[in-house]
Amino acid sequence: MIDRSKLSNSFEFVVTAGARARQLLKGSTPRVTVGEHKETTIAQQEVITRQVEKVEADSGHQP
Image 1 (cartoon, rainbow, N blue to C red):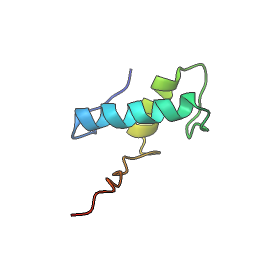
Image 2 (tube, one colour; image 1 turned 180 degrees about the horizontal axis):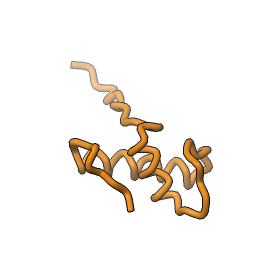
Image 3 (cartoon, helix red, strand yellow; image 1 turned 30 degrees about the horizontal axis):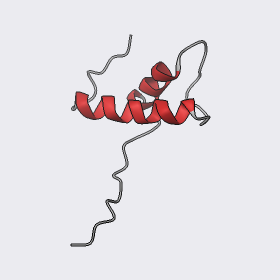
């Protein structure tokens, strides 16, 4: 079970972990010990342990 109590924003956790899970499915190297876990669980562990963090995308729009 993943303990999300350390995080202030559950929505941000879900979005960040989901994006990382997609990266793992496409072949990115896990940053935590994998074991027999699915990519979604690995991504959640990485976010909880702050191995990955959210990066704001550049919108590309000029004001």
